[in-house]
Structure formats: C-alpha cells, structure tokens
Amino acid sequence: MPYTFIPREKYAKANGSLRISTKSAVKLCRAISSKPLTRARRLLSDLAEERRTLGRRHYTKTAKELLELLNSCEKNAEFLELDTGKLFVHASAHTGPMLRRRRRKAAFGTRMKSTNVDMMLIEKGKGTQKKADVIRVANKEEMEKAVKKIAKTVQEAKEMPVAETKQEEITK
Image (cartoon, rainbow, N blue to C red; front, side, top):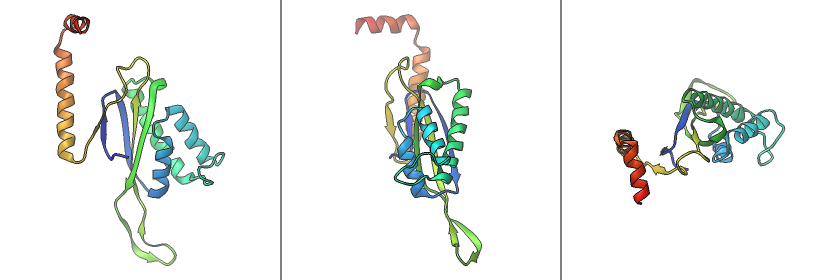
C-alpha cells in the first residue's frame, strides 16, 4: 500500500496519530480500502460492537478509533460538498512515533504503541470524469512536483473557454 498519493478526482482527507496497534490497524485499513463509504462504516461499527469478526477477532479498540477518523473524514467531505453516495474509502496505517513512559510499570514496559493513519474519501462513479488516476510518490520533493503539475493543469483548464473544448472534442 503506497504511503501517499494524490487522486485526480475530488477527495477529502483526515489523518491522525492514534494509540492503537499498528498490526491491527493495517488489517482493518486493508479490509475497508476500496469499499464504498456505507459498507466501510457498517463493517467498522459491527466490529466495534462485536457483531462481526475479521479473522476470528473483533479489533474493538482499533475499529472504534478508525470509525471516529472515518466520521471526521466524512464531515470534511460534506464541507467540500462531495456527493456522499459516490465516496470510496482509501485508508493506510504506518508505525507512529515511539512513545516512552517516564517510569517503568512492571507489567507494561516503557514503550507505548502509536500508529499514523491516513484516510481519504475519493469521489468515484457515474458522473465523475474517469476512474481515479493515482500518482505514486516516493518522497517529499516528488510530492511537491506532483502538486505543482496538477495545479498547473487545473489552472490551464480554467483558462480555456468552454467553446474551444467542445470543438476540440468534436475534432478528436
């Protein structure tokens, strides 16, 4: 699963550093990725309420945290005026910063788990231009170049008159 990407369609994003297991977060993110928003929310709520299992486990704490992040991402999508019926989930989880306890507790040790979770709701389906084209980014410099390239194409599309675009489509 790529760490970062920029979809060509409209999207809403939410991320957070959560105090959950990275291993269980990766499993749940893989389970809900590429699913419609309603199915992903239903899966997470069923896992949190222990009505459904995933590999004979409920993952209640992780499911509750991811459900909260998914609701936040949905609110961001509503603010950006995205069509909630066409939203698909992309989620990824990675190890977070190492947190240490100031003093050692006998049974728990000094290291505390944390996970960075990125969640995106991408608008796909009938009525959108095309399927999501993904730009894979390896580092920060490539990310900045990709953002500039997309901004330039959007700016060019805004400057082009509508009549010219229709004539170009007819001639092609």
